[in-house]
Structure formats: C-alpha cells, structure tokens
Length: 68
Image 1 (cartoon, one colour):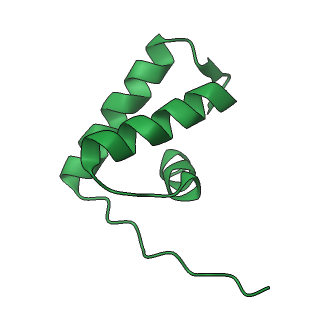
Image 2 (tube, helix red, strand yellow):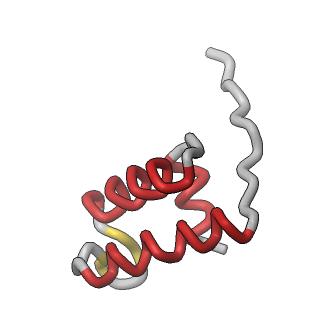
C-alpha cells in the first residue's frame, strides 16, 4: 500500500492564532491530561481549527504543531 503525501501545512500568523485559541478553549474545558490533550480534546481541537480556519489539516498536522 502506497502512502499518500499530504500537502504541507501553512502555519501563518492567522492559522497560529486560530490554533492557539482552540488550544486555550480545550485546556479550559479540562480536555488535557498532563502535557497532552485527551482523545476528546484532540478531536475537538481538530474540528475547531478546521472550522474556524477553513483549512482541512489532518490530525497529524495539528499534532505536529502542538509538539513544536
């Protein structure tokens, strides 16, 4: 099975602001365990980011941003 390469995520200042606001919302909702989001928090973060930004980033691309 051949792996399909995703387009590179463009983390400009607008995307960064949307990402950080979504992260803050999930932290305030207690959807974090230690330094990581819970499964619910991760799903909410992914959904909120894509809805507010109009982008279609994968869960992996959003996880990679958190780890930077």
